[in-house]
Length: 302
Image 1 (tube, helix red, strand yellow):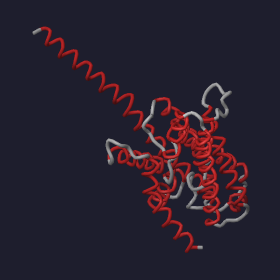
Image 2 (cartoon, rainbow, N blue to C red):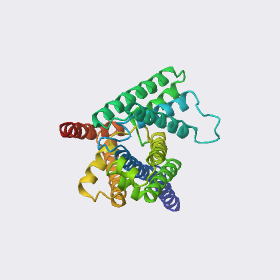
Image 3 (cartoon, rainbow, N blue to C red):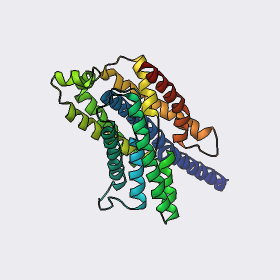
């Protein structure tokens, strides 16, 4: 009798411990990371749209995410920036994303055409996606190749508290920047010429916003892979439902982006159980039609 009772108590304790580990070490980090990643991508989408004056601008469309993906794959396969004590994958992803957005801005030139910006971004994105595939192809280590392939589709399956901490820092930096330059962002909505006439150093503002945006996107890509269209869908909806002032727009988009990506991840994880659909595929299914509709609207408007 005592032996049976002891076995029952021991079994319950082991079961509770397993449940505790499942929730605390697997489920909770994943939920936290999806919320933070969605918030980061949404806020970066707002910054890019404000910076370019283009409602179609977002990290995936402009090639920033693809550049970060190529950088991350290079760090995994070739050991780029391996001399750094920690965070060489994030730093390599940051370098790739910064190169991508710099190329887009340089190729765009002085043109203000939204269609040209989108086409330029798509070209740069295609180049870096091809570069990522080439890097993976060059890998002679099967484990490395599988790990790098992860960046092409995106997934939160390996989320841990270290990833959550990096994403939280990236979001905090973004929100702090938005608070500090809130008035400048509102001015940029009126056009770069108006902002310059008011005394703003537009070049410096562009550089700061680009650097911080590239850093934030590189963190998301480093911990979750390539996730597209979040920075397009959420800001587009929020601009229609919330005051255009960045004080409210940024916070509402961060919250909505976190909720959207968490919902998308839940569907990707459960809809095809026991298999899991890559989160990048799920967001593309939702975002691509929205993107096409927005292109049609902008094209007819111009």
